[in-house]
Length: 277
Ligand SMILES: NC(=O)c1ccc[n+]([C@@H]2O[C@H](COP(=O)([O-])OP(=O)(O)OC[C@H]3O[C@@H](n4cnc5c(N)ncnc54)[C@H](OP(=O)(O)O)[C@@H]3O)[C@@H](O)[C@H]2O)c1
Image (tube, rainbow, N blue to C red; front, side):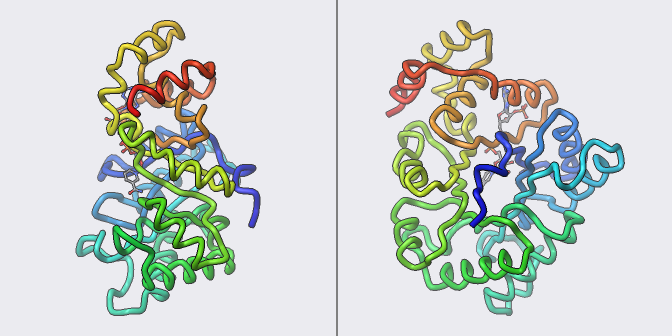
């Protein structure tokens, strides 16, 4: 497996819930400096073809080449979709994976993506035979050169352990919602760290409103001439996460990217970890 960390930018721009603003916001994010885009072939929450339109506009403006970009998309089971499916629901899961990937490449106007993520296991409680078949099909896509790397999302520690027992091939990425009240997904992050899996954290702001308002974060923001949101992103990076933001605001895009240059000392990182458990 290629060294994932060597080729991944340090912030992911997320394109969920942007509907007819997807193309314009994707282009704006690239203009702001993002070079990594997260999407999914799940029309219910993402407009992947709109991401492709935004990329095309940015290419035309000469802002970058495909090689400068990190593109991540996802395979979503039918249970997570609405009626706008990117595959034949009567087909086997292996074929659905291949059809979803072919449709993603067409939406994005590329011959390969950089990361292909299983949006979530088929069951909340364990790694199922469906997940086994799907992961094997995703490996085939990778081996055929249609993605460089593979990932899983919305996954628990127990499922990661089952997955590790079932497959020789581990994911390069885990993408999870990161709640401070659950120790910022501490157990899953530890599992990832031990195996050199990159942990992508989403909902860092929206799942942790009370932390954003906490006096410790307010004091750190004041000391560093930063916003509370920037402190949370700097914290996420300090504990080894690759953060996502889906901001729709040009100033926030700039602030989120600037948080990369904010180094929090260990005592500040410990203090934030202690806020919520
Ligand atoms: N794998 C999955 O199942 C899954 C699920 C959910 C999300 N995701 C991915 O993660 C991405 C991010 O989603 P998210 O849940 O983290 O939420 P989000 O869509 O990034 O929302 C973040 C919220 O924080 C605000 N915000 C961002 N930067 C800010 C700043 N500097 N100062 C103040 N407010 C700021 C945004 O408001 P403004 O727009 O006004 O800035 C928005 O209300 C999604 O687009 C998607 O790609 C994946």
